[in-house]
Image (cartoon, rainbow, N blue to C red):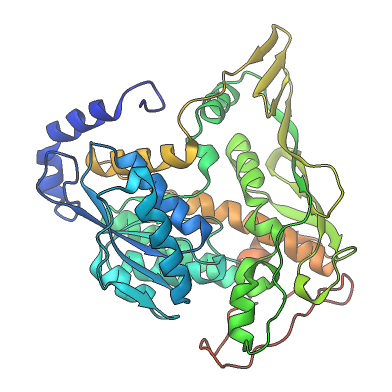
Length: 427
């Protein structure tokens, strides 16, 4: 298995062994490569499909080079813990790496027990919980892998940006689930764009258009918290809506290529087709015009409606040419170039890069970039929900805290409130 520049994980291991003195000096970065007698204890918070996927991915990334074991897990529902462990125990990359024992923590406060008992924390809960969980993980001095997005509102983003600064001071590694940043053809494409292959960027277009996403109907006996957690994709305080939860990937590519975040967003959208109760607060379509520095505009679309065409891509136009994915194709006056695809699964590569960065004493810290891409999506949602132009500062300084004041099962939560442009207030 090779890294982004063709070096193997075995090479990573040898490099890390040579860097033992660096780790001793850093103190809070324990050695984890295969020759060490230490075992790196992983903790998983959020045991749904993405959580168990991330756990399997880091086990595959560890290979024979790192002594890594899943040590503790947490979820709001015991059934999800049992399902995840059942899956992971049968997954080939995880054989011999599951050592959870009785460290199965259930409840809305269970995350802290995982943080307290592990060396690396992996966060895969619904996004609304991430600011609180990220803050607690960094405060405890633990290395972190967090899924994207990292918040659903301005107050959450402010908390994450503060955690970014603290992680820098503590020399902690933080990698986010924006896996395109670790995908060989994207990495090579962005390098060429930044080196001027298409000249100065003038315009970009990013799409995540697809058919319907899942939705869960309420079952008899479920209280408000149980139902909203089970159907988390369709409540803004948990998901942030599809533009935040999913389209953040494409918006992250735009920010990455341009090298900046947008100045403002002017969007539209609505709940046009998916109006049954289980669709909650979700808009089924968004379209946003983002303005970046130097007059650069990015057109953003995302849609989740059955029977519609699927189109997930990024398209960037510069003064000397253009680039687009999928296909990673450049068109310039010198001709057409296609970046070779393939390489390691980016969901695995991000964990290879994560572990390597710790081992070499140069921990990655991706919190700021993923926070900015998340806020890019949030400001687009704010604009579409209200029908107002929203600036970066307005989104970042927003006082709209969507998180419930009473976070416990049995609590009475507001029912879904679908935003109405022109009526919903910009807060």
